[in-house]
Length: 278
Image (cartoon, rainbow, N blue to C red):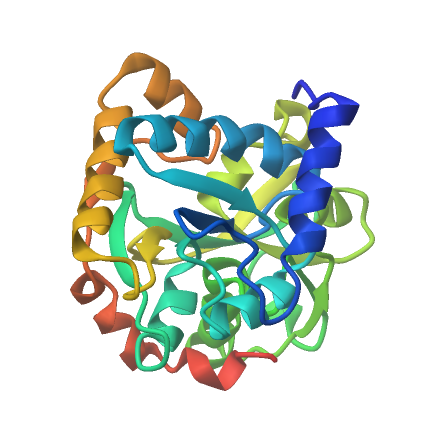
């Protein structure tokens, strides 16, 4: 069970959210904002990422301030404006912004990302074709593994079209399927494995996508190269410690490695823009 932050600590997070309004960077001149895509509800995200960002600040000698948006669409708007100095985002977020904001990937998990299509364990559905015309729960329209790639594969590989239903988080996807509210849902292996065993036991993976490089931590190009190197080194050094691995496992990141935009470029040929929703 996650230990929730104190009321005072959570209030600090809300101040960060409020300060991080459209067009603002809400930071001191000698500090950098660190934005995180809201894969989890706010309190869980704060519990996971605040100690990581604090450790990166200590190890890099730079001031990094964790900021958050309440929804994925808000996150995407701020990312498109370049309002994050450092960001943890999905691979396709970074690819889409590569020709505009030009975020520079620094580190990622060595373990690849794979999307999954789940149904209830006792569902009569035995193959993907049986889901044609039905509802698909997704954590956000632009989740790369749980929505974009799942929907592209369904249409192009199986000639199946489903109606996406945005239920806001990965956990909500799994709960909606487990309770029978929707016949199927899109997720990724990493978030599925983070769920309570009781919930996992109620679900069955019907389809798994091809793999892709995991979410990167990336820096806006306005950040000096020397500072980008400090942040990359701090992240890799943190990941080399037992305590750091325990912190990163909650993201989850199993083994942090250096990365560049070249790792993500092959995804441009996958046709995912056709499924992007603004």
